[in-house]
Image (cartoon, rainbow, N blue to C red; front, side, top):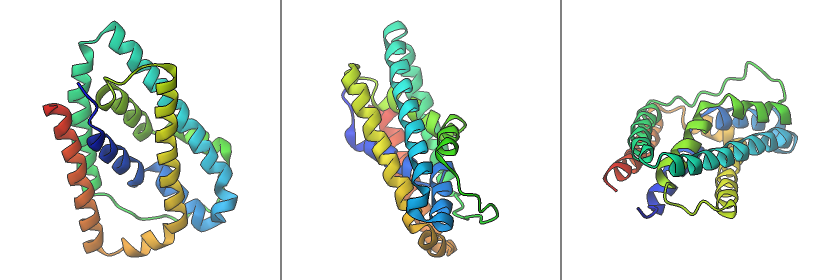
Length: 197
C-alpha cells in the first residue's frame, strides 16, 4: 500500500492545529508570559513530542515485522479514532481559562507529553496506519519524527502568537461552528481513505 500523502497531511495538520492540551496551554502561555518567556515550555513540548513520535515509529516497525496482520486491525482502529476525533472537533470549545497565571517551564512541557493521550494516539495512528508502508530505516524514522515535531511546534507557536485573537474570533458561536465543521469533515475524509485504501 502506498502512502496517501494528502490524507496524511490533512490528518496531521488538523490534529496538531486543533485545540488540545499543547495548543491551549501554549495560547495561555503566550497571553500570560509572551512568546519569548514561553520558549522553554515550547521546547519541552517539542522534546517530548519528538520522543513519542520516534518511539511510536520504532514500535510500529517492530509490530509490522512480528505481527504484520495486526497492521490491518490498526487501520480500522485508527479510522475509528479519527472519526471520534472528528466528532470531538465538531463540538470543540475554544475557551481559554486565565485562572492559573503560573509560567510553565521546560519540564512542564516535557511532562505534558507523557500524559497527553492526544499525542500518543496521534503517533500510533500515524505510524500504524498512514505510514505503515514507509521505509523503516533509522533515517526515515528520525526524519518523520522531526517533521511532525516541526509541524507541532508551528501549531503551538501559532496558538501562542494569536491566542487572544483566536479567543475573540471564536467566541462567536457561528464562527466556531463553521471552523469546527470544516475541520471535522477533513478528519472524516482522512478516516475514510484509511479504510478504502
